[in-house]
Length: 367
Ligand code: SF4
Image (cartoon, rainbow, N blue to C red; front, side):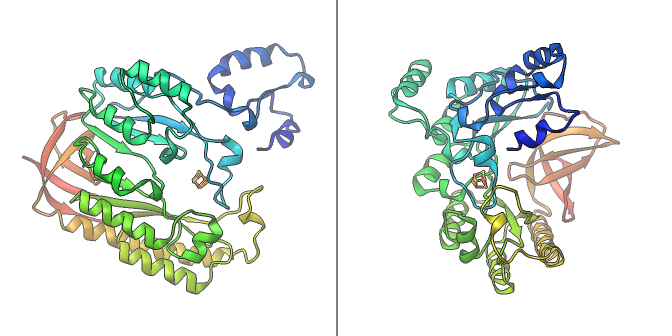
């Protein structure tokens, strides 16, 4: 986004476009062989990105959960976001590559995969007829289209993988048809992070988000009907340009109604080059701060209330790291559960009875 400005910084020897990431060693070696700054290497910008830049099977560092990126770029142009300019248009990773990576990590003992992308709801929308033919041949299928739900159905078949978690999702992805297919996949975690951003239709419109609060409410209902213990989390921006007290109150009331398990609250900050950064009525910092505090308080209260319901109940936990006589893990719906034990339970799924809770986590006993 700021190639020209970066060039002026004397300490910078090399500027790469996002498409050159996987050849970074080669570029660094080339840059090192250049004698002076005149020869600074500048390569492609976003305009040249057509295909998903596939790193193949990457080295993961976690032992229980692996984050698998399946998509890059975005075509949505929300008015506050620089991503479509910085990362370019949507590109999906071919499913055969995704499945190969997950197969490999499942053999290494990973039990949970998190499927992510910049706009994962767009997965597969860029596959051409030619790419689809290649996919069909690689997977032994005969599909006319291949979207996120198709990918999830194929990941479900991989032995050893016990949980499939979805990263941040656009609410518009969740339709009746999608949910009907999703609920049949027993490895799908009943935790969905739906980026709402605002609970006021006028603000959503200025944000150039492509849904209304009414549509969002239907999405929440659909998921709650399909998954009985589902937890919904979200991102909210406070202090978006022009957000009046009334608009904020509308958002607050909507959030109270939806009762998210947890909300990530962001104070709006302008990004140079976006439409929102030039909008009138930018909001002052202290107002953003105040609104943010109010929503964080609401979120903490929700989380506490959700946790209290689990007292005395049994949950399945995938344990992660052992520390000081305790081990923590996550439930499928993304609650943190901790138990006291000397046993090494890392990377095992155990049944735990909940005996105590606070707003951040649950405390349990092994069953
Ligand atoms: S906020 Fe998300 S959907 Fe909107 S433009 Fe940015 S990446 Fe795309």
